Length: 150
Figure (cartoon, helix red, strand yellow):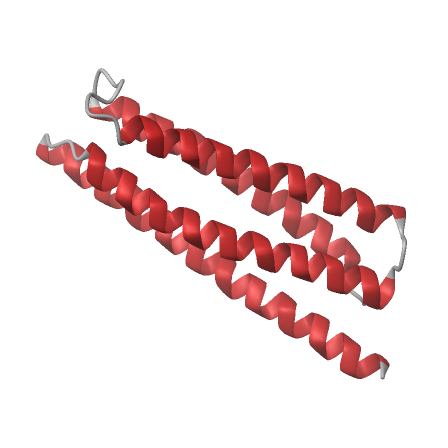
């Protein structure tokens, strides 16, 4: 039964890693598109909001997978461990914060008169979100790696 359980946790981990790569690719695509618009002297605030909504959907799916993986690792290897509980709490806080941040960014970009003095300010706003997301993913990776069976 132990190896079947490990396989299940490993499968969840593998899906999480693939989604992590998909999320990074989507972020890079949006960043590149915004930079290209900047070089052309164009601004597409509304379309950026639409692209970020798609990114948000990926984030929700990815965060659900993270929660599933943490739960699975907790059940399989560390039942009632304070380490798993701490990882779960931090992860939940991070996820809520990141979703709030992307919602706020989408809201600003979606306004009839976006509150940006320039397109570069919108790019900087996105970069701040990306930085938070990258920090979260690095922290999550370290936490998950710590919980994975040897």
